[in-house]
Amino acid sequence: MIRVATDRDRCIGSGMCVLIAPAVFDQDPDDAVVVLLDESPPETARPAVEQAVDRCPAAVIRLLPEPADRV
Image 1 (cartoon, helix red, strand yellow):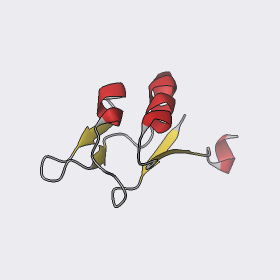
Image 2 (cartoon, helix red, strand yellow; image 1 turned 45 degrees about the vertical axis):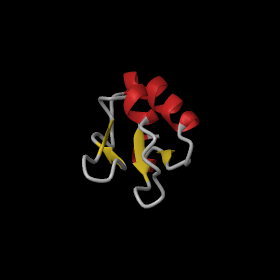
Image 3 (spheres, helix red, strand yellow; image 1 turned 120 degrees about the horizontal axis):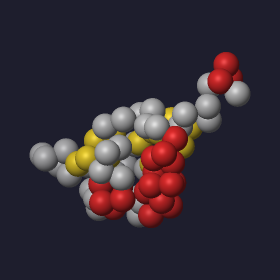
């Protein structure tokens, strides 16, 4: 399982995350900032989420560590 977090306050609305992982991210229609659709996407989404993390120009997306009870 992966866990994802975003910082809407720092998002600049580039939309790279939505283009890369549309099942996980969207953009708010009013201000274009990131909307996290799934904070615990399936493991199969990891490559796309990691790419979104790497390509976010404002660095507002991050992967969180797995909970201790799952390690």
